[in-house]
Image: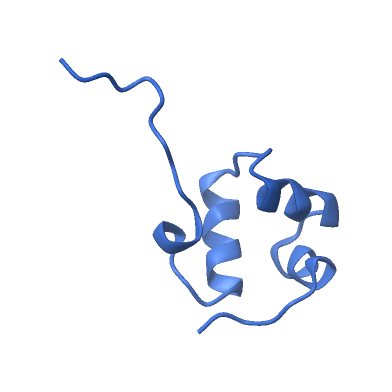
Length: 61
């Protein structure tokens, strides 16, 4: 279950500025492992479900 939080409240909960949350939502900021963990916990979900990581350097042989 995900929680309904404002960007400002989520930022307060994880100890960052609201702008950081905006950049996370827009995919313009790669969070540290600690921040990703804290955001996932605050939203009561897993990092795997919350963040999508694409390996752009991976090539098929």
